[in-house]
Length: 356
Image (cartoon, rainbow, N blue to C red; front, side, top):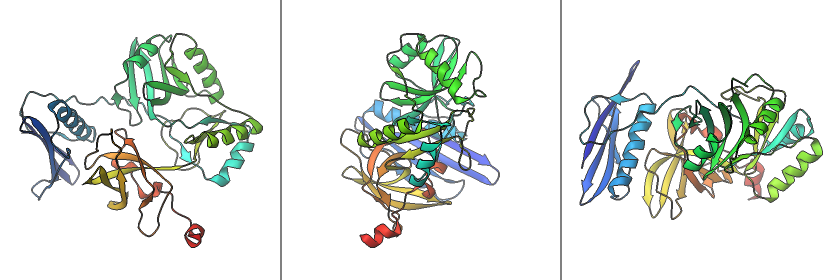
């Protein structure tokens, strides 16, 4: 089975075309793409480094076309073949996002008794909702997404209708805030939401849904910060216990802050190099600039050109923009291209360059 689809996007002066094709190659399949302005030469490429089995090609095809539809593309012609692509559901529900703080800001937050501390979980940000007995996941872009079966089962055991915030790590869900419980809790202060969240998790048997610990008081927070570094956690977060839950990210500051022990960046795959390596880049305004290469570990699928991935690194070099010692974390299908800005990079300090 081969398949072909043409999508178009029109808004203001924009008039763009995106084509995707699934091509049979001797019992296996490749997924090809082409894009550009209507009537102009098109950029072409492949989402598969080598031919893959039909089921894998269909998965790549689904994700590719669904991602374009999320961004406003619509079908301009009939697809060939019998495979149907589901249009993703936009929920309109968004999480509260955190701004980062530097090392010098941490002491102030440790001393401030109005801020509690929680571990920063190293997973996939996900809202979990139960409404009229139906359980669903919602990613950070407000798009409904699938859940592991065990999480659906556990969520069904918790009482009432509710919406909680947290991160999915493998098949374990770690929750750190309550947004709704038989009505909205957004206007309530965090300390009240956490008490209600504790009671919700205790209302049923949900062994795979865990309550993230909270730490208060300067001495306790300092000890937890030390232990978190020793345990190689990703970082910690500070949250104002008196603040409501406000979706989105404030321009600066805010009632919730994150402090990461290691740097990470969301980057775009700009080329597949072979030997399990991909070239990566970030946006500087509207221009894509290179930030080096990263190796994809054995056992992980090699991401295709245009996909957004997360990389952990020590710092970026000011001269080249390349990441030093990048480590591949995984694909980020919950982010948009605008999230891959050069502004997120942590640069090597001038004194470190002199010392080197």
